[in-house]
Image 1 (spheres, helix red, strand yellow):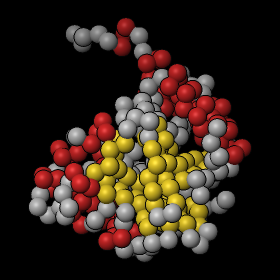
Image 2 (image 1 turned 60 degrees about the vertical axis):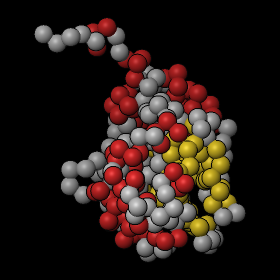
Image 3 (image 1 turned 90 degrees about the horizontal axis):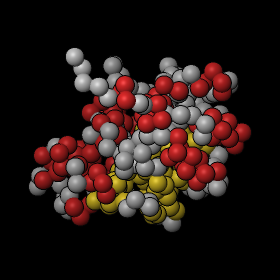
Image 4 (image 1 turned 90 degrees about the vertical axis):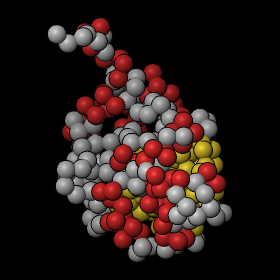
Length: 265
């Protein structure tokens, strides 16, 4: 499946169900990040909408596909600024429910006083869906989005989101790459590993956790893994290349020793 090089990238569209990526909304010094929209009939969910850098351009792009007032969910994979810091705006200006790990939900009010504002219709807690560690099913009309456990990859409370109709795994930071063009397809996987290695070695907890994740993913029917940064892995062959590489990568605590913990003189 080839991707267009326009502002919004159609990842999947069967006429009833759509998955759309926005890859070039971050301007200036911000880290490149992808945002996602899933539409099923008249239902819609935004995944990892980002912060102030992306809120305005993202809402302009979303309006080409759906009315903001019709959003069912704003879904956060974890707590990082490029994932969730625009959340107060979504609460004020939409009726969407917020989906987050139960580990991070209690910290969300620290983002902005709007969380306790009378401007939030329906109340903050009434619009919060807290995901347990084992994940769960998010109903989108008569379709579903599956919240898949990905804890410590890299956050302690971390989820990925699987769309079983499109067969896409929105993988958050797993598979992230530092690239100049997130829409350019991967043609040389070995060369692409140089754009992933350092990030994964520092941001992923350990090879042990990665192997648990790989075992889970190998049992899923996936045609595309789409990370929150960089280029997607398209097709089962490319996905298998990535899984084979990542399950052997030492990272995180595997690379630390006592020299990593010394008081500076």
